Image (cartoon, rainbow, N blue to C red; front, side, top):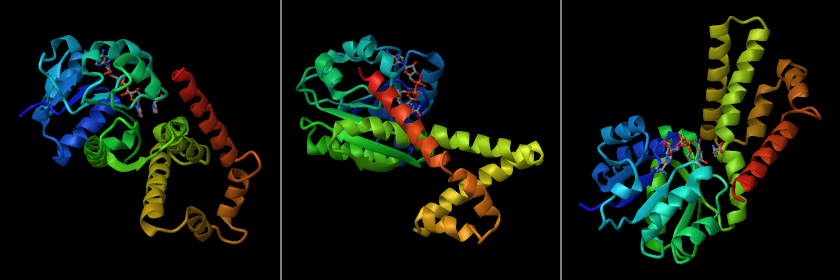
Length: 271
Ligand SMILES: NC(=O)C1=CN([C@@H]2O[C@H](COP(=O)(O)OP(=O)(O)OC[C@H]3O[C@@H](n4cnc5c(N)ncnc54)[C@H](O)[C@@H]3O)[C@@H](O)[C@H]2O)C=CC1
Ligand SMILES: O=C(O)[C@@H]1CCC=N1
């Protein structure tokens, strides 16, 4: 069977998505070529059953994949894309998961008739619980859109946006968001230790509390604010804690600043 997909870069995100695609059966490993210069990471992709290549120069001359997924760092995009110009201005759709880098950069290098999709995934894609947000240009056919959306659904939820400018905010919220949440776990663990709990107990209580609360927020269908009120007894312990967390310089303000810093960095990466 012919190659349907080329994955360029098989690091943290590339591998997370690749493993999900293959496990879902939406695409077979033998329909995928992975280009990855790092030998260890290349072997990891080969172990999934994919054909692997160390660089674009070793790809077959007659290769005509449906999609090429670019999963390298934003700083490397321009240099990497220069090796894929032969796939530009044709039927192959390019899917980029890079932060910041806009459609204009892809069109400049690959040609402005190239179908381009930007996708912002997040790392829980590795366990099928990701949030993938997609922006596609008018050049992308319905068939390609449907194929990509179906493939991405193997990694979690898929949403689309019509305004590319929103991708910086998306990146700052759901792309980077797992980093914030992992830090919240660290911070609650540190606070638990400071309150006198032994290290292991502190880590366990923090992690299970965040896990249980997140699953409950998803499965109950209730608003987070309503759930919060269910925990908060009148003049009780939660109210005392939330007075700090929801105070004037509390978490909402901190997260607003956090997201804005990440959004600005996404814009910088794209310029
Ligand atoms: N890590 C995350 O949680 C997320 C990352 N992203 C985006 O995904 C992209 C990749 O990020 P990570 O996977 O975290 O980085 P990473 O460093 O783990 O992976 C990048 C991979 O690209 C490979 N590479 C470098 N030059 C190459 C070339 N010429 N051809 C093929 N492969 C090449 C590297 O060897 C590396 O394995 C970035 O653009 C990032 O903005 C997007 C959302 C979330
Ligand atoms: O930190 C980054 O730049 C990438 C994009 C979103 C998550 N990781």
